[in-house]
Image (tube, rainbow, N blue to C red; front, side, top):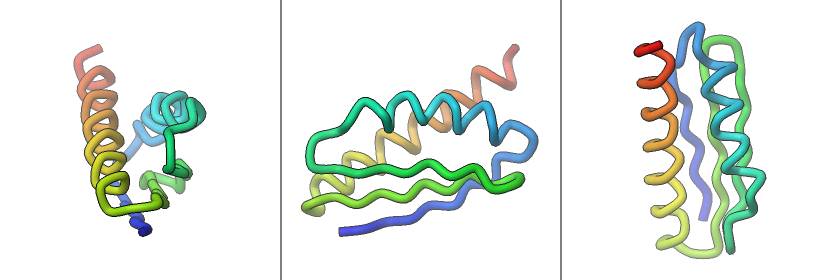
Length: 75
């Protein structure tokens, strides 16, 4: 199972990517995640062994991206 998400993150792309890379490097069981900053967009590629793992990883990384953006905006 694979999913690719592209988020418009504007000038905050690099900071959000760095925050998510920490989580991606931790090594999630049965899930591979690549975080790719591309200009003002952040691409998140997720590959999981099953749908449940894919859904969980998507929920987690989208939530963390939202949280990271909120922290940056409120600084």
